[in-house]
Length: 249
Image 1 (tube, rainbow, N blue to C red):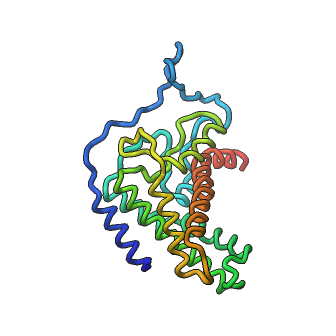
Image 2 (cartoon, rainbow, N blue to C red; image 1 turned 90 degrees about the vertical axis):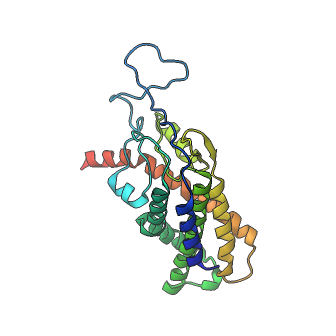
Image 3 (cartoon, rainbow, N blue to C red; image 1 turned 45 degrees about the horizontal axis):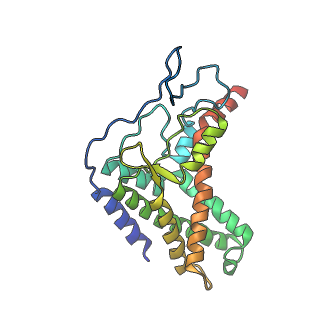
């Protein structure tokens, strides 16, 4: 499979998908002053809330590194075709986090000596980085095309909830579900994990030795779960962590 062909076809699909209608605004959490809370309504924390209670905007450094998180004080609105294309290009080719994740993953592969036929040394490490990146390009191209086709939200949104564990749960769950075009209703991340599976299978065409395409596809899905949760968690808490470190210096 030609990586260039896959990239161009994915970008074309992202451009071609039309936005059908203007959708209603996403609900904004309320924090009324005094009085009883309405049933099912959660108030936002005040300034005296415990650490990590209220999400802070992502730190500039982490936002630069990871890219597409939407802070809790922003409305989630459906992306236009052009916005989807720009997000795809940034995430796939121009985000430092994209390369950092591939470099780190290749280092783990190097330590595990996987695939062992590539051996060790800088040349072998370069092959592993290239393999990781090629697989990612295929995955993100198919995922972006799939999200555009069904109107799924491709970005991570910081939690409107309070407390460390609820926000951690949000960062985990949002790796497996996302909003549809209403920006209110959650749906399984079918395009994401389907793309990861196909990319893992495709990578067997350039990896040495006999390999099970199904096994490699399943392994790619497991990697997506792990790296995706880590990325979401860092996006969720980067503002809080950055603020704590800035107070110490």
